[in-house]
Length: 71
Image (tube, rainbow, N blue to C red; front, side, top):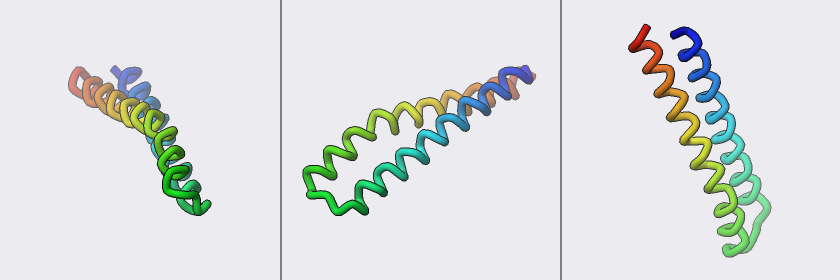
């Protein structure tokens, strides 16, 4: 079960890194003083990556909890 716990922690950290990347990407778009429509387009490009990273984080945490539960 140690492998499940450590692999889940790795998956969760990858998801967290993706979430942090999304935060920086949107913050950079906001700082660049884009028009409202261009800012909306920039944020729409980041949303699928944000959801994927959130999914990875949740799956990783579920793997950790499952590994702890079985171990």
